[in-house]
Amino acid sequence: MLNFLAQNYGSIIAGAVVIAILALAAVKMVRDKRSGKGGCGGNCADCASCCGKQKRK
Image (cartoon, rainbow, N blue to C red):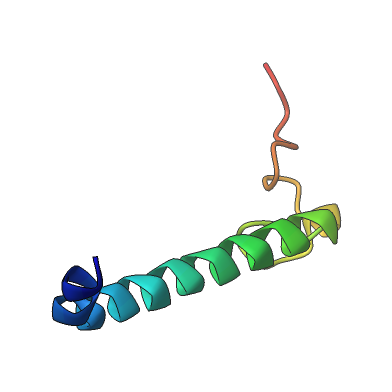
């Protein structure tokens, strides 16, 4: 087991960094959604065509 870790520590560290970046992006998206910001970064309260507020036919 230690031999495997010693041979692949660079890949393990790179993978951990990528996973951390993805986790931070997901947390930011959840926080933005909870605070009322839309996916476009704008204010959905003032946007008639954003966040599913389009008029249905």
